[in-house]
Length: 119
Image (cartoon, rainbow, N blue to C red):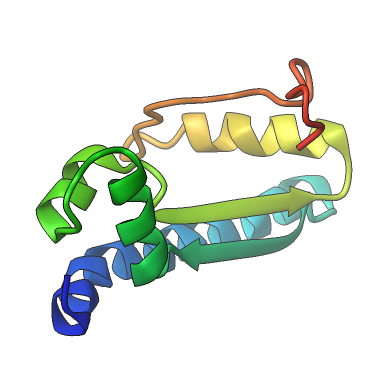
């Protein structure tokens, strides 16, 4: 994958991250108006680097291409919402689930079911 192909490939992921970041800020502000506190401490996000995408595709037996990355990788973009308290996490998840234009494809609860590695 050339640098130019990578930059074109990640553009929709960057746009989606910007969009979801705004949505999270709006939900946080709405929550504040209703409950007089902010549940969200801060937000982290990232786009997988070109080399990381290529390495992961290679590790899984695929050539490094934008089409294969789009079809087989599910972690090209990521967002992490950090809350002050555990109950705020569940409240924030509930707020997301109430959004009619957001579809949750996969959900993992690592509070109730921690990973063996502790992450």
